[in-house]
Amino acid sequence: MPRENIFPVLKGTTATDVETRAEVLAKLTPLQYDIARRDAAKEFRIPVSALDREVFRRRPQDESDGQKNSLFSEPEPWPFEVGGAEVLNEIVAEIRKYVVLPSAAADGIALWLLHTHAIDASDIAPILFVTSPAPACGKTTVLALVESLSRKAIYAAHATTAALFRLVEEHRPTVILDECDTYLPEDKDLRGLIDSGHALNGKFLRCDGEDNAPRAFGTFSPKALGGIGGVHATISSRAITIKLQRKGPNQKTEKLRLNRRGYLNETKARAMRWALDNIDALRAITPATPGTLSDRDEDNWTPLCAIAELVGGGWVERAHHAAMVLEDIEAAQSIQIKLLADIQIVFGTRDRISSKALAEDLAQIETSPWCEWKNEKAITPRQIANLLSGFGISPGSVRMPDGSTPKGYHLEAFTDSFSRYLNPPDGSVTPTQVAEIKAFDQFSIRHKGEVVADRKEQKTADLLGCVGVTDRKPSIGPEEENIDLSEQEAIRWEGEGGALRGEE
Image (cartoon, rainbow, N blue to C red):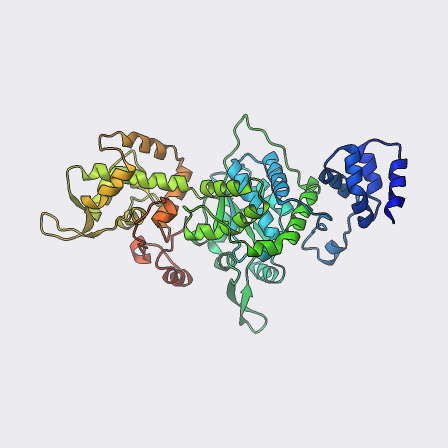
């Protein structure tokens, strides 16, 4: 219909209400509406995007796609160009309407959700892991929002592993697994699907078919997990972790009704449209990421930072802040500095100490976490070496007064770090550091402790932003850490330089 034939219809209506006009506009063809939308929005003095939403709600939805494939119920992409920052802000608003969580967590989830729609532009698919110390903290609500807003979402907690392998290879969906703490530790094939699907070239070898012949399944796809406590270290290192707490008595949220989530299709449709329009631009971006991230964390945040860089609108800063907060960078730095402060006290007037004696003396400090550092066991000499590697400090042979030469440390190895990070040894540093450690609840201590103690790489560039630090990778072997490794995990440990962490 020519432009001049559209407006007489619009101007002939006597209604002045925007919703009434939207009913009329919804009956136009997409091309007709595209011609009319800007003038109609100008007439009512509202943003074009607001008018688009009202019209979209009133258009009959084509359900043919859902009938063709009942696995996924996807709306049509938004018919007009959208701004990425606007879409992200919209998603954040929906999340915070239903869940109490820090702004960094809401921003991280929003970026991850938009990433699912642009998964074809990425070579890494970070896992979204939503966890809490107890039930009723909002995990299921977050995952319900993920189901409503992510690309080709499928809630697969009760699907067979065989079905999931085929589904992921054929459709590259967003796989959602709730209550994963109840079944994931025992299902090594499912863990393999999740682990290997982190990278674009991810494959998992399984016996398949009537002849039980080996077959490599492609496993690359977005995955969202929910559970109480931690997950296996191979998953947590590939994940962006959202730690939820139960809302307080004065914190109010709306209730997300599962049968009333249809309105979220509008936001999802806009996310789909943004991804379609920007997929090539995303492929071309090499975004900046926070310099303090470890190598694996940088992998996880790169596709999200690429989205932030492309959308602009303050989202670069928000993405970097979310990465710093969610990866516990400040906590990691704090725990390392706490270790330095306690080592300064342990040395006292000594000029050398064995690694074994250092670990034993640290465990005697009641106000510090070293007596129950990991799995409720005292910190080990190797874990101390891991933490100190970020400062460029490593153990070596030390000649003791009795003539023995155990592994240990000379005081002079700490002089530079003491001067950079601690006040003089007059006790002024210790209360501050102890207060920081006491501020960690029991749930946080265990998880932060394990992440810092057992990461594969703890370079100064990753954690402390310093220069002149030796790039060491203290290895933790299965025998030394008493970790019960399966044959597959032992192979992975070999391939990663002996840095596999145990179960969290």
